[in-house]
Image (cartoon, rainbow, N blue to C red):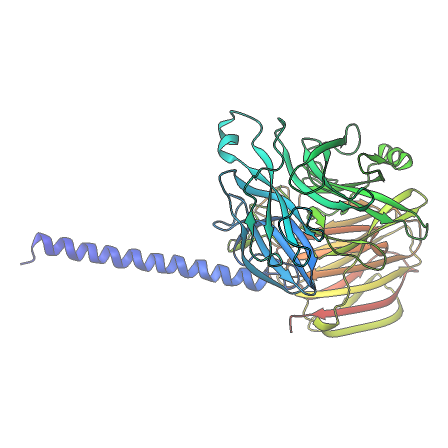
Length: 532
């Protein structure tokens, strides 16, 4: 006869086994989902964190042949949470290596966005001229004070320094170096060396304006001026400023460019980054009068018209022969960033882009140079000099190339008043459409049928559009697809659109559709890309 204790034991054992099996099945499903995410969505050439959440790029600098990228990071969950600075490096901006977390929360709060500089002259006294300190300037966010709503001065600016080229950090013992004057949003310091006056300049987001501060040593800061009242888009909070000079191509002069990210208020909804062109005298940034008139007439001055390029800033300590700057953005949008269908990791960065300043018949325009130097990662190349386009031209046939990651250059010549649609498709029924409508003088991306869009009502509610700023009957196009992203550079980067998508499987074919009769395709080059 079985006793009560034995009955209870066997019942408990059966319950444990059933629960364990269910948990095993659940964990197996979870692991399979992780593997699926890795196979379908993990980009090859865009940085993404190994695990958990990422947003704004922070503290980017170039030193001793290495690009350093820090980023807003929640190391515990795949949604936004207590912010740390993650860290990754690259030697070619296409292959990234992630390192241990650089900055963790402290008594002053979590670690919000900021920048980093190489203190060559040892103005801070924290390094030496032989071994310059890397100085990170960041926002401490006191979430406890913010949650209690007892005060509004819960964001302050602090610094940390590194004596081993940015791999380990020591926080300054007298933080914060810039206290809050009583502004709720007081954050995202971007610092650069202003050579004419031998001083450091800080751009700081303060509500819906940018404030400028100066310092001789990075340790103490004085207010200079403010910018933003009555100009630009004010549909949301201003964030992540950046100020830098750029030569105007072919003009022999230079102007200053102020970047300002805003959320919401973007041209296609949610997050986006606007820019202003003017002059800076070491104290005040003044918008160029003609630029201001043009902006008041039609605000089309966005660094990217796609929905997924936000909070971008430039690398410090980097230069090229053209005296341009190197820019990198967060490839997502706050409308849906926490809901996108990945769980092991969330978010990737855009590809880095060199920024140039041009002048056309409408005035100054910021231009993004598409990333090049793909030879090392090119596995197949297709080229065709010139061919006439039919109503539907199959540019890439199924089985010709692996379209998980690929890059294309081409020119459309003899444009008519018609619509030109590039169509990426797979056998699962997914399609991604983008192109140019000459009737409307407008570029577009339509991801409504691109795969999984169920996680957000706004993700694909309507196509994204961008006005064309160049008047021409030919169109230069460069675009790159990398697993879950599309970056399109029109007119040599005068207009750029970046958007993410989540197709059920890689696209297999690429077509160009139009009712135009005379268009020609010239200089077509297609590269299949892979990590070798």
